[in-house]
Amino acid sequence: MIPLAKPYLTEEEAQAAYDTILSGWITQGPRVQEFEEKFAVYTGAPYAVAVSNCTTALHLSMIVAGVGPGDEVICPSLSYIATANAIRYVGATPVFADVLKGSSNLDPVETEKKITSKTRAILVVHQLGMPADINAFHELCGKYQLQLIEDAACAAGSQYMGNKIGFHSELVCFSFHPRKVISTGDGGMITTNRKDYYERLKLLRQHGMSVNDRVRHESDKLIFEEYLEVGYNYRMTDIQASVGIRQLEKLDWIVKERRKIAAQYNTAFNHVPGIILPQEEDGSYCNYQSYSVYLSKDCVIDRNTLMQALLDAGIASRRGVMTIHREKAYQQYNQEELPVSEDINERSIILPLFIPMAQEEVQQVVNVFLRLLFPVPVATGQ
Ligand SMILES: *Cc1c(COP(=O)(O)O)cnc(C)c1O
Image 1 (cartoon, protein in one colour):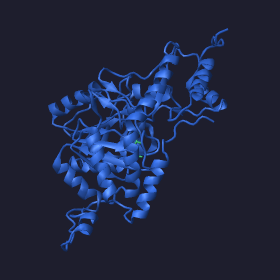
Image 2 (tube, rainbow, N blue to C red):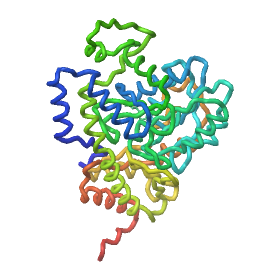
Image 3 (cartoon, rainbow, N blue to C red):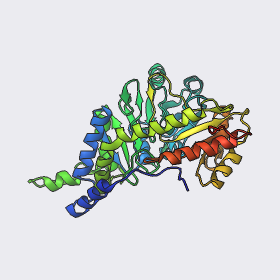
Image 4 (cartoon, rainbow, N blue to C red):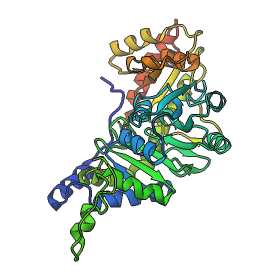
């Protein structure tokens, strides 16, 4: 069976976790701080705050951005449900805007149409690692005095206009779930260029405590902590962070390897009628967290038939990204139709892409796929 994805973890990550476990300091401590500092350097952001996952990163970002009850936040529906859930955690209302057909990312024109006097923020997603048009959203946010938050759950190692994702905005949220490009089991990170946000994020992730455990532990003077506001326990552990440090060292290499496989798929499927491939805009560099192709109405086979046929051949695949507005948990929002998002969800298929993926495995996916799409057997050099 060829799986859809698997995390790239080695003896090095296992050794790092082992060492941390025996160090005596296992929850948020020196390894978390090191991971944060290295992640900030990697992205070029002044500050980084590690948290338990990207969903909690998004929740804390909503809080520091001042989003609350009565506010509206515009986001795509074509995303993982955590994107919109984070908006609801603070009592605000998600307002869904449609996406662009090419990138599957939020459409700036559709987004502007959804802005009202209640809009407080735009939550833009870099779907499947493909960078959204950040500059267009900065412009919108400047024009209407809104906060821009990036859901970069899938986008560690992707680039926009020559800089790593994480560099461009006041609040950028990452995930280290095993389905993403690098993993700490579960885990998240927020990069920010605002010192006030940085300080408040550190408070909020640890119960609102004025001093963290490590400062108190290392102090030669007696320190009593205070609780400055109601916070959360959204800590990352040092065990996770020690794995994350090793993963971060490999991130650029992992992205390069992923891009090689994506390029092989692109070459193989380039001229197949009815297949639309993922497309990088000028200035964007995608980590290919997932490789998704769109089957248009001209395609000779429908998406679900193709998925079943791949499964029969021992190849895992997934449907395109979900649409949040059509889930039961969102039915009270009574949102209007989002034709592009719905179409992408129904007509896309995500193909296996992981590191290391053997050449034979890539070729097997390509062969099965092409054999199904062409009513006559593909020429194999006869
Ligand atoms: C995976 C994902 C999340 C959630 O990340 P977790 O770390 O699992 O909480 C949020 N948004 C998007 C777009 C995702 O793909």
